[in-house]
Image 1 (cartoon, helix red, strand yellow):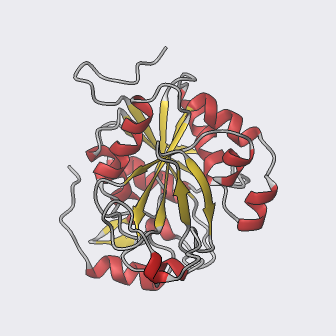
Image 2: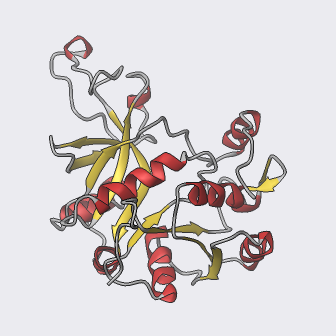
Image 3: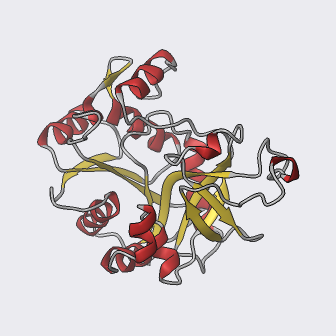
Length: 269
């Protein structure tokens, strides 16, 4: 059995980064350069800084594989996975099996287009699982900066219980403010009552295995939100609040320009 905590009490977890070469809006996205280095290496940097026991890039492309391996970073590996996976979760599962991880191992899925994700966000997901042995899955959320952003269907909203259990995710505005914006009650002192879902997931491997074997749920297909498969099948998903703001990832050329203009010192070495 794999221990979920190291001797000093910090979570023992593995980060797997799914990285697909093809992208409709930004082809070759993982290899696009930021501060002179491939985007995928910036994501790896953040995962290493979070204290992961191992970091593995799971890709469908030899160019991404070689970029990661040639960087020769400590505790970082890369695997070629099937090009036919319908989602990043399926790619992560294949990689976890190839690594021989135990069913109780904590596996954090960090998307390959999140070059500025704070290390603290990755560690927070791992800690949420390590501190709650009954949980199989966890994710993050953060308050929207303003209510206008909550109207964007590309930004996913989540509502959660008092204990942090996810109640629902939607592209629509939730909760609905029956008495108008002036009736809004902010989230823990935040600017809006709306929580923005941050797309990072942590799983106990046994839960991830069950998840990827389930058929697509009706709600999942309707909202085009994979995480709704968990809720539709009575699988609890814990939603922790991000310990610091998590910047948006990279989906388009405009996003890449934004990231490049917001250059930060590299953490590699």
